[in-house]
View (cartoon, helix red, strand yellow):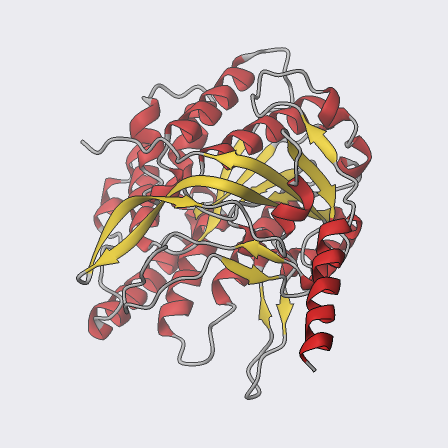
Amino acid sequence: MKYFIFLFFLAQLYCFGQSGVSSTSLLSLSPDAETNDLSALDSLFMNRKIIGVGESTHGTSEFTIMRHRLFRYLVENHDYNTFFLEADVGACRRINRYIHGEPDSILPAVTEIRLWPWLTTEMTELVEWMKEYNSNEQNNNKIEFVGCDMQLLKDDGIELSRIYTRNSDSLLNDKLPEFDIDPSDTLALITSFSEWNEFKLMTKSLNSRIDSLLRQSIDQWFERELTTSYRGNFRDSCMAVNMIAYLNAKPNAKGFYFAHNWHISKTNRINKYNLPNTKSAGRYLFEELNDEYFCIAQDLNKGSFNAITYVDGEHEMEIFQLKPSKRKSIAYQVIKNKSHSQFVRSEQIPNIDKLLMTFIGAIYGKSESGYKISRYRPLANGVATYDAFIVINETTPTNLLKKD
């Protein structure tokens, strides 16, 4: 019996050690580099409405820089013009005004996003490039910076106040609902929701001043907090709904979705106990757009990154180091002895259904409840989870903006 187990183990090593992966070398991460490597992928970028490009950790510098390079290429060569960020609708409006030439400073504009994964030097460099691109009168296809998330209500309240202040509607500004509330305070939540509905009725004739996406984001936040039914998919469904609504309002828009690998994936995981299937935002986009949605996961072989961890119940930012990937991982099979980062279609990775990928969110090490967070996960839907992968050989942490 031990002999057969040994033979099975050798067969597994041979299977994962000998599988050849046909991939495209990405010769540089720099957005200023030549683009011959990217132009070889042109056929994949055509006839899409949204391309999602993710990240396997939130605090990795190279993942943002690579997306900067890819977004820049898509803008300059494929007429992409909309940057969808995994951040709140209202929180991204200031950046959008900034890249369209409104007098402002880059740091406070980016800091208004509030979410630490995006408060980085790498993000400011991407935003500055957008501003520079839009300022060129020869570039008619101007870039829009659009938040598609709905996690924080306070951001929307700040943006609403700006809208009415700009339009000299001081009386209406005074009647804005209180949005800086604790959702666990049921009375405050219900009161704010009632005030919001009254405010919408009062300003019905002025709805053009509050665009539909901002109103929709506020409605979504209240719906999530007030619902008592299953809401496991709610946030991701809202991000997809918001992006589709934007595309419908602007038929010439072509979007680049910048988020974690989970959100951009086409995951449709079957759950037990009669719970609804777990779906990602990318899955909802795929169901609506079919092949006009294309998603690329980013993974890493080894390196370091920023993440939050919990020590004695308190959270703190820490730099984590990851060892070279396991043999039974996508990163190992794609990179092996290659020196450059690689681009590969999912169907070109043998045995992908049996391989693991790095899958780390904003928290690593220990969670708030004290359990140890694992590095790896299998693909939820095998080869259908992502259309392609970018695998970075070695990574470094993002350069976090300093707090005032």
